[in-house]
Length: 170
Image (cartoon, rainbow, N blue to C red; front, side, top):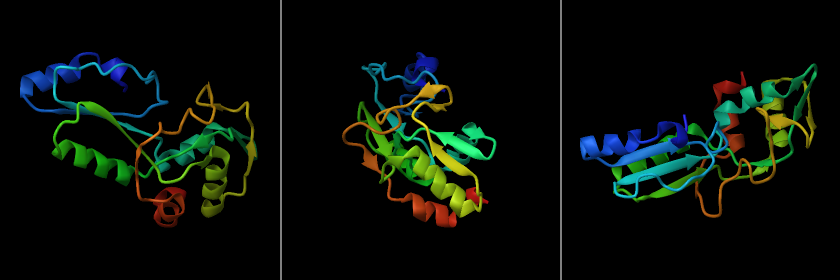
């Protein structure tokens, strides 16, 4: 879900438990356009993350067109889910920041290039075509759509390292 869908639930939960809230959101998913922080009087931290490496296969399949894959060449900066989990654990165990923290992978590349590397590592011979008009789950992308803002916390796992040990490529 998204923060817009949750409404006042995080605030009510924080008030009822007396605990800080750590809210996870993945921008670019659903209706997750940024909005002002909804809980100014409570202890909270919101974690925004770029797309996960683990979703690359479903992203590739969304662009399948016969023996080719049509994907946007827009920049993406995906992150390993293990790096997101580590950031979430760090934030949950720390003091509330009353702010939004953004995490992203350590490198940004065009989406079509990430897909080509994944397919090659998987032994999939389909061709990836960079298509500026290809939609990402219905949305036309630009270089800022799936990349972080100015100063994200960066995960440590590089795509090639994740790919070399990932069962997702099989």
